[in-house]
Image (cartoon, rainbow, N blue to C red; front, side):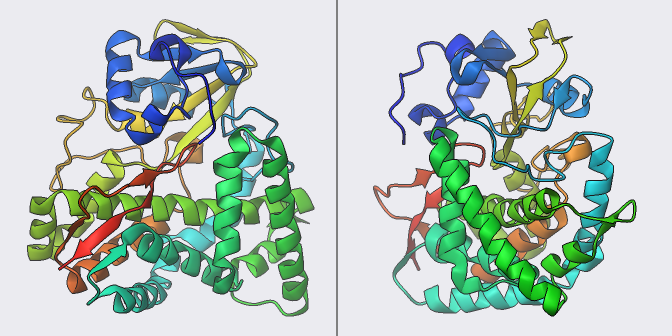
Length: 394
């Protein structure tokens, strides 16, 4: 955690890197909804924070006044080359997204379900029967690393490198530009070598898919190609391991929910949607490119907006008992995967991984709880999830 001046007033001086925010942001968002639905800070050269679902939705759909060229609030410049389609505005966004759509349809994702079960079962085999484990390190972090490596056609044993890059890009790189750009360059070099192999021998993987892709008859530029690969690796791993880890943390600390899911496995898909709502991992950002006014607040060009989908998911005007996890919640139009044109293209993949991870774990390890006085650590920055969940098993 970086040493930073403590927040004096969340309404006018918020800081999403403050330890209190990282540890437990929910009461902060609730306070802001009551005091000022849209907060502002001079930190990071000026950032707005909407906390109501309606305001988050309005900004997410407004591509005229809010640009996606910068999607992370940080103290330095964004990585070189961008990360299409997430950093692409209309009209180019449609073509960049269309390139990826065939690989992430429900039918395409279902083909990866057997591999996902295989990965989960192998990991559970290592854990089941032990007296204790770290659910984040030993299980949640491994599943998307291995599956995304499989989908990209790169070695799963490079997982430690992937995790280091993610930590550098999304945590350390928020305040350290040198770390940010070094990690970005290292990832580009890594994928450049992988792409050279695929050009000689194409395969059934995402790197080969992007090499063959065309937009208006033209191959992807180097910036587009490598930016999309960096996006797939980072977004495909960090968001999902954070979600799986949060699910297991919840079940370890809420025995009634855990016992009910063990007894009623058919409830799992509904429960996963509720976990996604309550513990949505991703907060994106937008750059204000044209002055506009929303809910009494004037948004000034050149500043940023912290587009907190997790805060929107806790808005009591949208969700009854918003701060309570209701695993059989009926209507649940959560924003965990974003809103608007940039809604997560990997939502089908993430849902499949989370459901499979929980089903395989609960089938073999139905009884577990958080270690007494356990130090559960949460990541800081654009993606929130537990990085350590020490459990007692059995």
